[in-house]
Image (cartoon, rainbow, N blue to C red; front, top):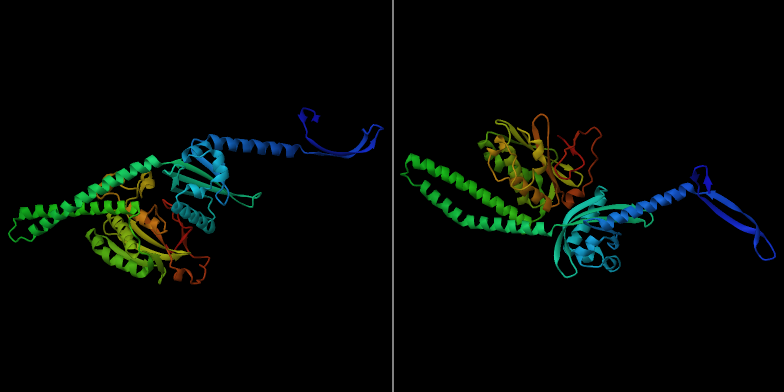
Length: 429
C-alpha cells in the first residue's frame, strides 16, 4: 500500500461473512495492522545475516561458528581446505574436538571455562594443533569469541584460525639450532673455566698475567651464563622442563631470595629491601622456579636502577592469587620498546641499556615460567622514575579456602597496566 511518496506494509486478516450462490465471498470482515517497522527490521536482519555469511564464506582466514558442544553451525571454505574435509561434512559429521589434538582441546576448554567463570571475558587466543583428515598435524592461531544466543539459550562461539604451521617449523629449526650450538659450547667452556681456575691458584703469576686471567675468567663466566639462559629458554619453550608443584610459604621464599641476591645488589651499589603486605601466604607453585623468576627480576632491577638506591620486594594476597612486586628507581623504558619487554633476545636500544650487557632472555624466561604455572606477569612505570614488575602465583587450596574479611572501602589501590593480562586491582603500594 502506497501513501504519498512511500510504501507502507500492512498485515491483513479477514474472513468471509457472506457468499453468493456460487460460493464466492461477497462480504469480508477483518483487521489490518501496520507492520512497516517490523518489515524493515526483518529486511535489515536478513541483510545483516547475508553480510555475515558473505564475510564467513569469503574470509581469507579459517572461520567457523559453533555451539557449546563444539558442533559446527557454519564453516568457510578456508577451514574446509585446511582440514581436508568438505564443508558439508564439517557441519554435519565433525566437531571441534575431532579436529584438535586431544590435549590441546582439553586445555582450551578448561581455559575458556575458567575465563568465563572468573572475569566474564568474551575472547580467547592460543596456538593449538589441528589434525587434518589425512592425519597431518598443523598449527593454528585460534581467536575465539562468544556471545549469548537467546533463541538457543546458550553461547555461540566464533573462531578465527590462522595457519601458522610454517612459522612454527621455522621456530623449531631455530630452537634446535640454538640448543645444538649451546650444548656444543658448554663442554669446551667448562674445560676453559677449569683451566683458568687452575692457573689462578698458581703462586708465581706475574701481575700482568693475573690481570689477563681475571679478564678471561669474567668473560668465561659471562659466556657460561649466556649459554645457560639459552638452554633454559629452549627447554621451557619446548615443554621439556618438569615443574614440581607444591604448597610453599611465600615469606620463606622471598627471604631466601633476598639473602641470595644481596651480594648481587651490593656489588652494584644497591640496597635490597623486603616489605611484606600479608604474612602466612601459601602458594601452589614450583619453589625453585619462583626463585628463578625473582632472581631475574631482582637482577634486572639492580642493573637498571640508579646508584645508591633501593630495590624493593613487596607481596600480598589478592583474591585467589598472591602478587609479588619488584620495584626500582632509574631510567624508564622507552615508549616504543615497552611492547617488546618480555620478548626473547631483545634489549632497549640505547647507550644506558646496551652498556649493561646481557642476552635479553631473563624477562622472557621469567614470563614463560610464570605462564606455565598459571600466573600472570607485567610491569608499569611512573613519572617519578619508578618501575614496578609484578607476577602472580596461584594460592594453595588450603590458603584459598580460608574465609577472610573483605578489604575496607578506604583501602588504597593502585592499578598497574601490564604488558600482558593483569589482575583487577592491587593493594598496599
